[in-house]
Length: 461
Ligand SMILES: Cc1ncc(COP(=O)(O)O)c(C=O)c1O
Image (tube, rainbow, N blue to C red; front, side):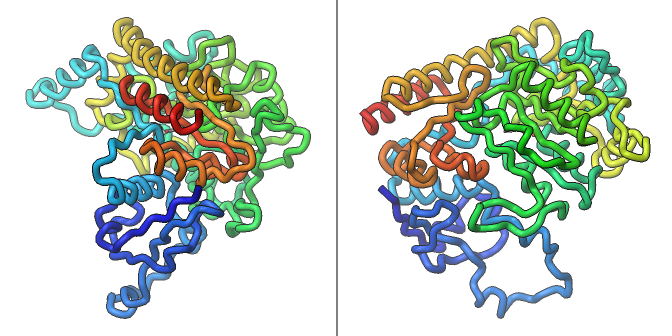
């Protein structure tokens, strides 16, 4: 059943959505559907009154920004969650939506950060700007921990404030004149950064795609790996494994196909391995496990989902020296130039945390946190399996991808929110091939996951 939210402009201004936070908005045409096709929701737009009274600069809006659709997926979900809270002020809303971590950072890691932080108050321990590429001991330890025997050198590794920021920095390296492919569905930052950089055409509402992006369909029918024989050549291929949102991870054979495909086409793969530590079978943890990958791939990764660093901020990107542009210029040199221009290095305190994460005790503690979320995943998968749904992902990732054949994802999202007060994520928000699915995140306190599953059972029994 479709939900209709009755919002007042006061309600909207109390929204936590960053997307809507700077201006005054009011509700216009409350029956407009956005972005789900059949869900009646309010659309927020600046009123004409705003534009009449406000001073306007002479600066024209970046036309690429204007191409972006409605709001970034998660602010849109936050907006709907807030609207729901206004309607049901006493509801105990449980969020299994955005994919933010919930469990405390292990003490062995926070202690190291506290120590570094206190040292900053001493003459001997103070440090200011560090190397833009990250501290050498951390680069070296990332190499030893994640890329041992893969011939990745310390200076191929760039420490950063997170994988999302690196995705946009990589787009700055590539510029506006490249074409790109993404898994469909995929983490929204690839497509949105591509739009912002001007690599795409306009959004085509009929197909729910931007022009000049190849959407590589990943569905149960193809085992969530695209049929590469049908994918046209692009300059850049974004590939995420284990995948957010489908939770599937690619096998060695599939990644070998991908690397060969990139080599044949002269493409660059940007491989996002932000969930690699969740893999519990033999699937590769890094693209560099595949022979030849260093000539065609970049890998970006993160401490966010391993150690609860979503707020601390620490990640890294590997750009091998062997990766060259068509004129023979190393991609790593341009990446270094971008990093030095728009980034002043990850926080020294987070880097101390990163070093602690990769100590023997820190690694054990991170495995403990990941194990906890993996148990949550099993609880969620068992619940939907017991209700007769087709359930995907989960095994190698903290995301469960549940199929509701023939239904709109936003309808299902609204139904679950309205009837169980649980926030999920509509699959279509990750691309058109996500239609008919919802993503349930395993990031949550155990009692909340158990309670959400009880409510799912009541709704769908
Ligand atoms: C696939 C993927 N890549 C990158 C990120 C962002 O990572 P970070 O917190 O390091 O910016 C996320 C966060 O949800 C993600 O799902």
